[in-house]
Amino acid sequence: MLFQEYCESFKMLFLVPLFSYMPDPIHKHTILYAEDDTDDLFMVQQAFAQCKESVEIIHAADGAEAVEKLKFLHSIEKLPCLVLLDINMPGMDGREALVQIKGSPLLKNIRVFLFSTSSSDVDKAFAAKWNAEFITKPLVFSELEEIAQTIIRLCESYVAEKV
Image (cartoon, rainbow, N blue to C red):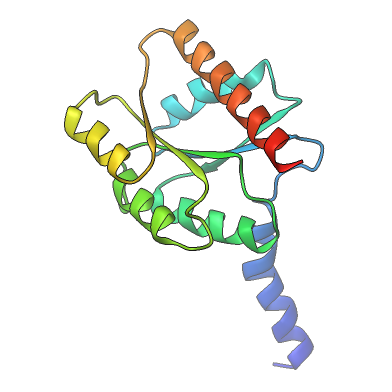
């Protein structure tokens, strides 16, 4: 294989999929959401839909994918304003992802929320130990919309601090 063909193969295998993670430049706020349940993902996307002009949700199917996407976004200086991590996911779960994010010098300052159906005090204490916040997933869609609005306000204050 010629070097040029090798470079093209590398680009197609690694760079093109990575660039699909890049936030749309017209969006002000990017949120990375790690969630394995497609129903929960859909509900969160719907809760943020009313603000789709100012918010982009980047999805990761598990904690490992979330950490990889964060590293890539850091490399192109496009870190999200915050990260939502489901706790219970196959592979790397939200707890493990939180430990990796907060243990990384590149990522430790990103605001992280553990976002779970759990309301366990153990999970809340774990989040606090790793300087993250904890939100129990609501059962009512209107409450999820309120959480989305709060998250948008947090992103707006984050952007204002950066300017």
